[in-house]
Image (tube, rainbow, N blue to C red):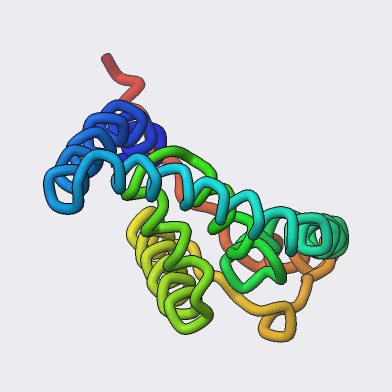
Amino acid sequence: MSLVKWAFIGVILLPAAEFMAFVLVALAIGWLWAVLLFFATSAAGVLVLRHAGRRDFDRFRNTLGTQGIRAINLDTPGLASMMGGILLVLPGFITDIAGAILLLPPARRWIGAAIGRAVKKQRAARNPEVIDLAPNEWRQISESIEAHDQERIPPRPRKRRNTLS
């Protein structure tokens, strides 16, 4: 399924899942404690963003400026902590758990590696004729060499038409 379809499904299902998670937590620890925990995690997210947000955002912006769009991964300095803080600020316990996990470096490395493997697998499955090479594994061939190679290839014999009819 495409990323757009997954995002659409997530936007539809996440609020329902968050509501169910809130009800389950409220039944387990009580409604008042669930509401207090709900607001406490949002406050923790604001503190995380306030503490590391500006510094990490500047580092991310600089990395994005130098490396371009390829810089967007969980190993990018500050990106995971910013995403974790944003997820903590969003209301709901599921996003709070996801945000807290992104603040843990071992989990961040594991998630980054898993996403990298999935992207590499998807790219390989999309077009098996395309081979990604590192910059030191290829060289550009000039057009004159390509033209010279075209001259050496013998032309195809043409099919003859029957002109007797």
